[in-house]
Amino acid sequence: MISVIIPTYNRADILKECLEHLSRQTCRPQDFEVVVINDGGTDTTSTVVQSFIDSGKISVRYFEKQNEGQGIARNFGIAQAKGDVIAFIGDDILVREDWVQQHLDMHRSHPEESAGVLGFIEWDPSMPKTPLYRFMTNGSIILGRYGGHQFAYEKLEGKTEATFDFFYTSNISLKTSLLKKFPFDTSFLKYGWEDIELGYRLVKEGGFRLYYEKNAFAYHVHPMDEESLKRRMFAIGKAAVLFDRKYPELGKVPSPLKRSMFTFISSAPMIALFRCGMRVFGGAWCNWYYFAISKQYFLRGLQEGLNSL
Image (cartoon, rainbow, N blue to C red; front, side):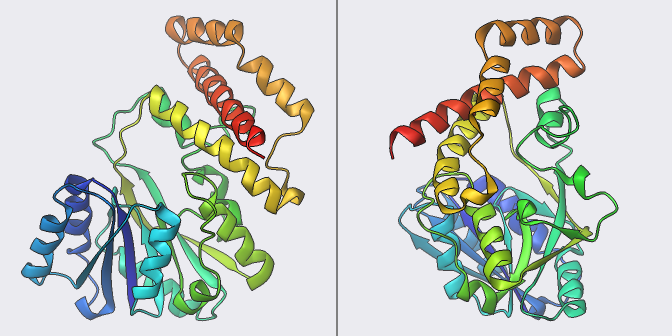
């Protein structure tokens, strides 16, 4: 059985859609349960979840706790899980009808404790098809190496396994016994790196292998704009310092040379140039503009993290 763990915080409307999609699964009802953790939210989440509990469409268990962040919420969910496999999704993930079955089948093919399964995600059709959305889900869009920080599935084309950098907690499943040995690191209190940190630690200490199953398909409903990109990159930059202190061998804090390059690209004159090119020509100029903005706020977060040492 799979336990689907969903941390949520004041997003009752999209959580309702998430649970609705889970209620349409083609597998047997007894093959999965849903564990919802309300991480200190104060909206109508409890009412939404209770309606699914009362309907009996799916097996749902609901827990409330104080707001402490996604990593701690997921650890709480791991402790409650009854399944021998745990799947993580976000409250803004809408899974396809065979999603649970795809994860189940992969784990039956790879029963070893050290095996995990990564599913595929793309933007929900309701999301706008803007340059920002395209940038955020292409990790190779700049010089074939850099890009957005949401997903980078293009790097997995034709592959059956993924590295720890693809430990995306919006569509991933692992053996419960493994997660109880290797929980999320609770020192990552804010957004950024808590998932990648666990992925790397699992590989380094637990012999973890992450298999990629593109047919374990889900849509992501996540409105984004330039301000949310800035907040996201600032948080990633700040958390990168903590990650680097734990694993300096990975070089997640850029070298002085690379930081100088990012500083130049994200300088006010360069951003003004990219903005002008974006407005006049569009295309690649849009990618360079968002890349410059992302590096500007990444560096600001990085500096704040370094100053706090």
